[in-house]
Length: 85
Image 1 (cartoon, rainbow, N blue to C red):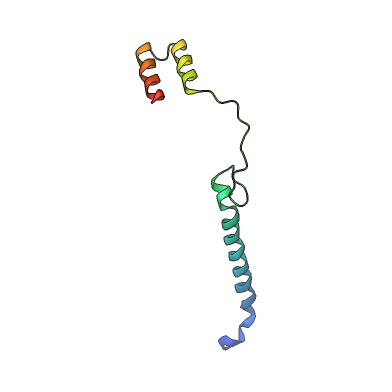
Image 2: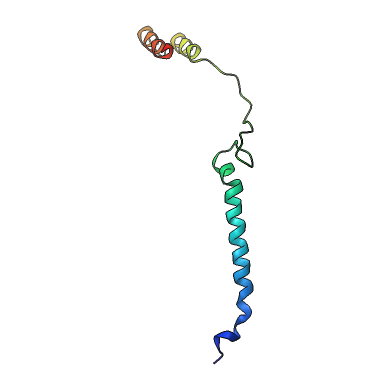
């Protein structure tokens, strides 16, 4: 039976595994935030997002809902008071 010291051929596998592990950790460090938050850049800075379709004020949305009949006038007034606070 061969001595354990005769099996020195395994060390490249340990080295390759260590390099692979190092690459995976570096990917998480540098790209982890990018994977979790879709509009963050390489170092975590915000670089924009999809082009905005235009901001619609909440009061306008309330007016539209009232016009469509989704809410009644009492609820419109109640929600408008909340928005003004």
